[in-house]
Structures are given as structure tokens and as C-alpha cells.
Length: 244
Image 1 (spheres, rainbow, N blue to C red):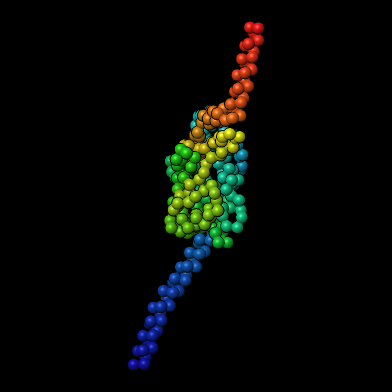
Image 2 (spheres, rainbow, N blue to C red):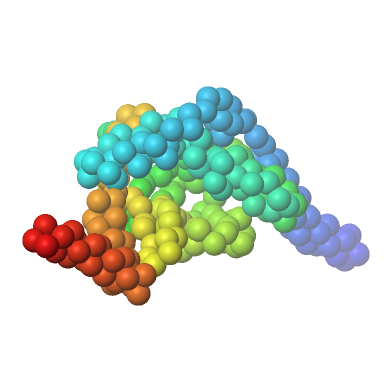
């Protein structure tokens, strides 16, 4: 009887210990996979091209579509959004493709720990200056991560970023610039984009139309009205002198 009781206790202990060991082993493996970093060459920018703004401005002035290279976009992204400070985004690289999803690689810091993230990327523009980046098939290191986990990581990484907001596994990016003038503002923002192989095809709002609106706002101001009055009186005096 006593032997049977001991045998049952051993079986109960084994039934408890074996799953516990398996769970701990699995957790350790997942932790190692999640914090591994074999993609540093993917998220580290090797070449830089600072002509992003000139390319966008030229497109805005002409009103025509234009192409941004991978290097132009990644140079701009790293200078604008990768500002290492405690938790946040440290490195970012996007690779554009034509007939398959684009890719994004990043190095982030969350709760004091660095993670190497990778995911497939889809891009869209709402026409009003907001670009939405959708992420799927994400990995932390070598470990595939479910969307709820990715959503929490994104919300922590961009919690203090005024230019990027998160929604589930989507990033809403303010892709534009606003120039403050004395009586109005002039804005340039991306209205259309479509990835190609190594490039992205873009279009912006018309800078000519923006400048015209700014001129109208100026002419409607008190200072503008005064200038118009001076010009009018000057012309009137010139015409008057022709006949006297």
C-alpha cells in the first residue's frame, strides 16, 4: 500500500514537473530567438542621399509625379525619426518591391531592451498628407510574433512621437511640411505613392496652388490692402502726369 502511494506521488510530481520544464525550456528558447540579432546589415544605413527634399520640392513645383530612391527615403527616415533616446526607434530601413510586399527592418529599444524587428510592408496615402504603413508577418529576431504583440511594441516605440500614431499594426505617418508665412501657411505633403523595385513613385499637392492661396491671403490682409492702395495711387499719379 505504501509503495503504491509513493508511486502515485511520483507520477503526480512527474506530471507536474515535466510540463513545467517544457514550458521553461520553451520560454528560454523563445527569449533567445526574440533577442537574437542577425539582421544588423539590413537595418543599418550604408549609403546616404540627402536630395529627398529637393526631389519632393521639384515635384511639388511642376505638379508632376516623381520617383524617390530607396536611399533617399531611408536617409530621410533615419534623420527624421531615428533619434536614439532611451526607448524608441534607433535604426530603420525600407526596401521597396514592385510585385511583392516591401520590407522593413528596424532596431528598437523597448523597456530598456533592444529588439531587431522585421516585417512585410504595405504603403498607402490618404491624399491629405498622411501615409499609412501596414505591417504583417513580423518577427522579433528569429521569432515570429503575433499581431497583438507587434501592436504593443509599436505603441511603446512611438508613444512620444508627434509625427507617427499607431493603430493595431498600422503606422499613420505625417508625411508633409508646413511653412509658416506672415499671413498664411504653405504646405507640401505626399498625396500618392506606389512602390516600385528599389523606388517609390510619388505625387504631392501643387505648390503653385499653395503659393496662389498664400498670395490671396496676403492681398486680403491689412498690409496687402495698403500695398495695393500704394500701387494703385502710384499708377494713378503716373497716368495723371501724362495729361498735365
